Length: 353
Image (cartoon, rainbow, N blue to C red):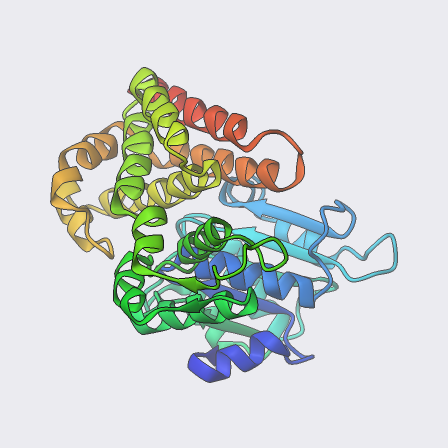
């Protein structure tokens, strides 16, 4: 089944009982992750209990094509809900997913768990997308970047929940400053809320967000500094990446923002590298990305594309995922987690070069 727009929102709030698997795909990686997280909570699989949740990557599916079917057929040892989460960056290992969905729809495969598949931007010709859209027991939901108006509405809702309002002069600069990637937009909104102070700790008379507040917290300089860090790491220049990281953190940059920037950069490299593996040139692959690579960063991005290969980018994507999980659950300082991730990417890049 195929869901979009309001129908997709309704489904994600109350999934149909007969649906056992959902594919979340699209260019907005932050929205894909957010919807996958929310759906996992609804399906009772948001914990890190290995008996309740199995997480598979592209490498897992390539090395053992039967692993997904085995995990989907396994019953929970604790008696509760069980969830299988699959994270794809390309379709190279997606054949086993498509086959399982088609067989499950025909009653030829045993499915005891709920399945959530996260993927990048898929064309209508995509085999895995066609499988999910054709099956009656699965759903495919596209996750596309918010418009400027959507991002602003998201911000206003979050601000209102903390007792904050936008001044008239703040609406336009906030709209320009917010990323159209849902995950990054939420980070920026959280940064703005923390700057103003949470509802219970905010000084009196500080309940309005002004243009000056936005300039102080969401300036373009911070986004650029994050890109500098990951760009250097992706080129294998650990010294420059570490120096850029220290500068960004000293200026108040968010370590979680570094991890998110790494996720975005590695995903875009992987998408472009997959196009090159399919026969496109580096230049054509960069132009095909949405949004295209900024002209001032095309040289470095193209150099990284020629250095990296898909298998190494998969390992880098796994390192990013592990860092995100560490930042949320391990109790380690976020700046240490971000620093280790930057170093790991640089090491992978040097190895490939």
